[in-house]
Image (cartoon, rainbow, N blue to C red; front, top):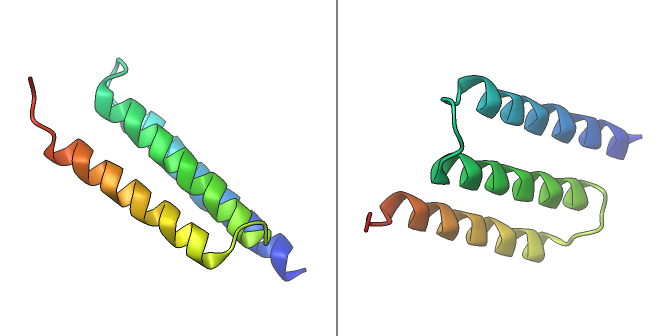
Length: 80
């Protein structure tokens, strides 16, 4: 029963995040909008797998570090 509530919480949390992305974005699909959506979806799938017991904590930590590194590179990238 506890897993059911965890999954519901994850879906509500990330559903709200994705809805927020689409309601606050400006028209058009730029580099940042697409990357933000992909990062949020990766975190959603990882968190869902973690809450269902399909992913262990060390692998989820690796996913978090990968997302943080990609987001950091996206923010500090130099325009060409």
